[in-house]
Amino acid sequence: METQRIEAENKIILNIFGSYDSNLKYIEKIYNVRIVNRDGEIVVTGENSAMAEKLLEVLIHEAKKGNEVDKQMINYFSEELKETEPERVEKISSDMVCMTVAGRAVRPKTMGQMNYVDSIRNKTIVFGIGPAGTGKTYLAMAMAITAFKNHEVSRIILTRPAIEAGENLGFLPGDLQQKVDPYLRPLYDALYEIMGAETFNKNMEKGAIEVAPLAYMRGRTLDNSFIVLDEAQNTTPEQMKMFLTRIGFGSKAVITGDTTQIDLPRGKNSGLLEAVAILKDIDDIGINTLTNRDVVRHPLVQKIIKAYEKFDEKKSKEEVRKTAKSDRLGRSPRRFRR
Image 1 (cartoon, rainbow, N blue to C red):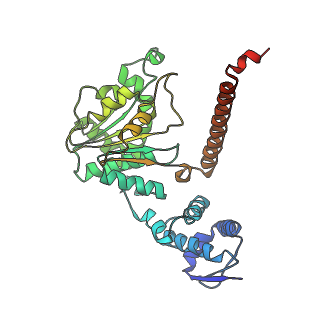
Image 2 (cartoon, rainbow, N blue to C red):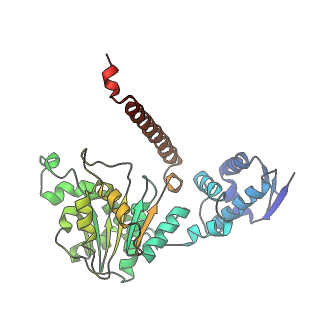
Image 3 (spheres, rainbow, N blue to C red):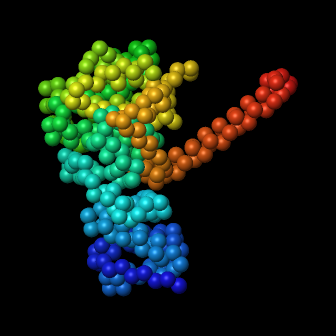
């Protein structure tokens, strides 16, 4: 039976083991090993002790940086280490994007997020596609604020398609801006958290930050700007083309969306899906796909997304099977119903 030994300070070990050794028991269950602390030395025993050792080394690296080790972190790193070397995994949270007004570091937490941030740094236009909770909008906002603070751009423009802002909102009081504000609220919330309400409001008054529905972008050329288009799955192909052709000199654009949550009317194609298919071979455009493995919300969200993915896959297979059966019969199955 294999045994691995890792030296670490007791306060680091306590962080890794968790309250009432809850993290320790979780790691033991994942690898079917036994782990004990012997005066500043973690001893791992079992057939999979080498794999458990790799995970513990990554967790020690995280704990030394002051990060709290929890089951979500353990679950992610244990999965990532199946395909990636520990040195590469350790780089994930070393890359700080910015600090929030409360002093919290904003940094990528998964390999997918790290690649996404790198793509934003190196490309002029970046697509971030993935399910809820993968940090695609929040990280884009953090990168926009960082670029603004570093004087890389002179303004930030945040936009969303407000497909409900037509007749469905006609009964609400106020002008169009007031009607669509509820759909822009998540963007405001991120700005308040990262930049602070006072600084945000000052820059809004000066016109250095603009939060507006996508319809307001028509006819403009956006130079020296960092532009974030959120909820892009709800753009039409015409709207997406209009947006992409607004980008001027010295500008950077990040387009985010979740292709599993398209709210367009039946028969309308998503501009996001079309744009990715058309632009995928252009060098200065980055396309990043985040998955359920990149979800950084409650672990239950990850399980919900996986369950829906399985359901959608099963439904697609059934539809293909029904279509194939109908084609073989040369007629619609409806004719056999009574």
